[in-house]
Amino acid sequence: SAETYAGVDFWASDRLKLPRYGLHKNLVQNPGFEQDFHFWGFDTLGTCKESRLEEYYEIVAEGAFAGKRCVKLRGEQGQSPAGISTFSIPVEPGKTYVLSFHARADKPGRSLAVNARTADWPVFPIQKTFSVDTEWKRQSAEFLAPNGAVSLAFSIPALAEDSTVWLDAVQLEAGALTAYAEKPAGVTLVTAARDHSVEPGAPAQATLRLHGPAGAAGKLGVTATDLFGAVVHASDQEIKLDESGAAAIALPWADVLDRGLYIVETHLSLADGFAD
Image 1: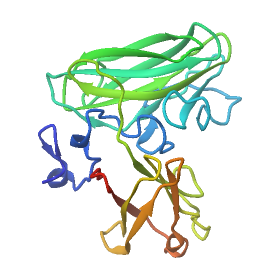
Image 2: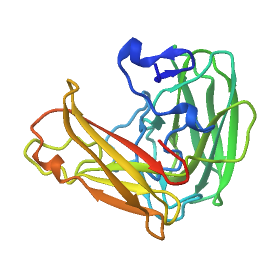
Image 3: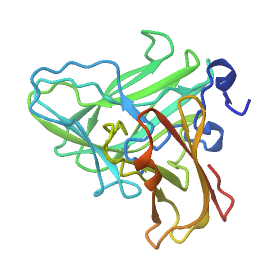
């Protein structure tokens, strides 16, 4: 099927729809956090006790290396929280890949732990702590894919004092290191809850936030289905981004959905030929 990546047909084997990994050299989805935490979750390892902080990870709309947003990582004295992590990314076993990222810190010599998890436990081709200074700097690590999937996690290890590191422009690519790049446009679902788990009866306050080239025009298709595949909403409309390369589309129909789990799928096509 069209959901075949790295030799695995994810639709046939598990009825999964994946991002279009063949569309761009950068396999990390939402690598610059322009779509908030979309396609990002948490690592599986960490230790925290009686934390003073409510959140260790925050999207900030200032001081980014590329684009308008980056992620702010807070380090708390003596704590080792689970890192912010990509979803599992299909890779070809035996092939060389390079992970790169841009980071800066509140003080010179701060630490950023980077870990690559794979489909086999505990096979971690990257387990490294990088030194981060106050100016944006690109750092990288090369590895040989030991199996068919990898996820990439970033965290601040337990330190003697609180610290802050900003992360942006993450890239995973096959072969040698090349210049950072990402898809030119994207769509973000924003709701009343960060993880979209809206309390039953509460308004979803759902909006689609678009980003891309300033003034870009095109079409956006939106389809929502319930857990059993029944379509609860379908629409197509013309879109145009403003001079800052942004647009927002409200989804009032989401406020009247019955209690349940829903999947929102978007199809964006720009006049210049880009489609995702």
